Image (cartoon, rainbow, N blue to C red):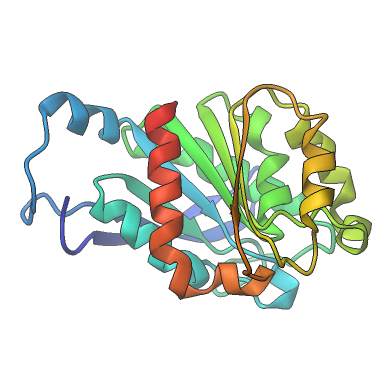
Length: 235
């Protein structure tokens, strides 16, 4: 829809008083590349995509999701990234299991609905951000769908994030799981076994021959944007 998104920064405070550095990406209304029906523009304006970055303790930060957020804004969607507690200029300390960070996700989602004129949220989590985001899905009414990029369902990762699993699997909200077939944390078999117990609508996109960290890289940003936009259109 537009060539260069407009980007704003702000601070969001969590329920336990942690201040988070947040970035909002919006389409640039002055540089439209194609005309869209008014109804289509209105539909896009009602949505925001909130992106949750990988594991803070291993260097995860909102900058890793900038390419996806920018791509979504070019398609006409609002997108929001943020540094979870203890990352970048966000206050507080990161937690090992990510349960404190779920408060960050909830706070950002509620703030977006109150301040950005949206009433539907697609929540997207990358790597360890996927289980953290998954635990927030049913805590915010306006979250209408969930996308995971490389959910760490494997046995080793489950030591840290296993208690998050049930929260997303029991949610009735629509879910999309994107994963590379060579993911080092979760095998295709492990993914399929986990999703057998998932409630509601569940979809998967498996990308052949790609590992966990490869999928997080900028080379796949445009593909993630396509998957996410298609999923929103189906909701």
